[in-house]
Image (cartoon, rainbow, N blue to C red; front, side, top):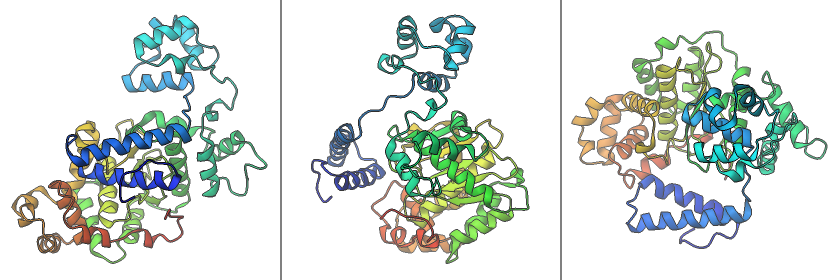
Amino acid sequence: MSKIKVVKTEKDYEEALKLVEKLMNRDPDPDSEEGEQLNLLSTLIQDYEARVFPETLPDPVDAIKFRMEQAGLKPADLIPYIGNRSRVSEILSCKRQLTLDMVRALEAGLGIPAKVLIRKSDLGEDSEYENWDNRLVAEMKERGYFGKASLMKYSKFELLKNFFSSIGSPAEIVGMTRKSNYRSSPRTDKHALAAWAACVYKKAQKVKTSKKCKCGSINLKFMQELAKLSAEDNSPILAQEYLIKHGIVLVIEPHFSKTYLDGAAILIIKDNPAIGLTLRYDRLDNFWFTLMHELAHIALHYDSGISLFYDEIEGIKTIDLDEKEREADALAEEALLPKAKWEVSPARLIPSSMAANSLARELGVHVAVIAGQIRHKGNKYVYLNKIVNEAKVRKYFPNEKWKK
């Protein structure tokens, strides 16, 4: 899409999304020409999504639980809106429908829209999959998530229940997302994230590793040693092998439509945490920073009570990040380009290829990794494009189904 135009087709839609991502990476001033372009594109995309992807309202109980998670509420905190402790329990376990008085109280007190709460909650065993988008299920089928089973022979509920049940319980991953930290845009489909995480989890379980992860040893020194592998030609594969030797499984799984995920740290299995990367951007600098960010979560937040960190690395403003994400970013940056080196480097003032190569040789890492850090630290994404764009990653994982 060379110019902004009305989004009429799926091709227009995909091109518009790519252009939005490019503009967001530049973080333009809202009043600038690029800022206005970003605002216009967002409006056009939202209009297309409203026409082609009709709004699917969440289940009322899911909406209440999500709001509880956001606000740090316990079931007892719902008593003023729903009634006694027993009534709260019945509502949250889907054994009783909300009354009109409850809807009004929850809308006024917790800000949950009445149009969500007045929907009849599905009380059957298939209810947790009722709101899953059919297009998402079709994409899961295309990826082979259901094996030879198809939508011609089985219902959506049967396929999803079987897919999730194979990891231990029908909704283990879905339930786990309630103990997740999201660094993602509001447009992200949380069901797609759950499907992706379940696939990564399954892949990780199939990887043979005889060593347990000593997570206390995952620190800045470990990450800096790992970063030196980036200078090798097949560094993504070497990183994968290196991590397995230390009890950490690195899985590559492309992102889903309507998600903008770069990576995740999955901490369900304490002995062998898993890292999933999507390679949403086919760039070596993105691979290494995302990998370091997820390792930082293992180093810093292993016992934080969070089971899964979903991370959209590019496209999220620093001001919108919570403390844990800021900590992970800081450690990842220090592992790739130490602050002490950056502050005295000529690259800080002149983001040239010569300065980037010199700094990369000094640190023993790939120049694309340093170029990516220079662009990020100086917020100068118009520089060093050739270096970062020529260092590709997906070619090392030819068995994955990459979107063109």
